[in-house]
Length: 171
Image 1: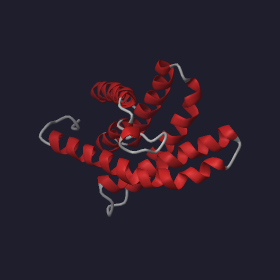
Image 2: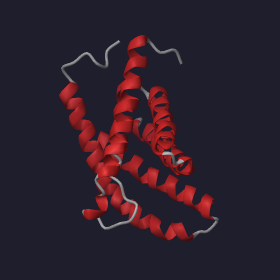
Image 3: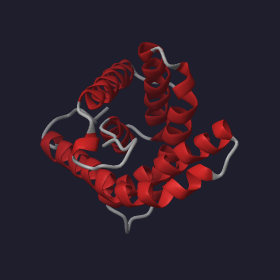
């Protein structure tokens, strides 16, 4: 994949934005509003959804991988990398497939990505713990992904609406 200077610059900016949103999200624990341990809004996924639709799956993958690796490095928690990667790659793969279905809006694609992210993280927990106990938590996470994925889809739709008069995605 050969990127133009404009595309590379946009990928770098989106990676920085995803890292900032991920960091910001850690400052405001969602557990105050939704009393489910480990639940996050997935604000960085707004960037992934945007990149998928605006730039394509290849660039979205580059941004996602950079965010996962740099996020783990900056947080000093390389152990969390397997959770981050499995969740993020599951989400992106699902969103790529769902985005090809004309019947689904950006909201449906985002909800599917949130659900897949939770499945990927449960898979990481299964691998890490060597136990099937995390599977019991999956229905709760999938229910919450309807809310978090819907909010991420809404934010992404608003972003596209706000940028529709710009030439950001052209050339």
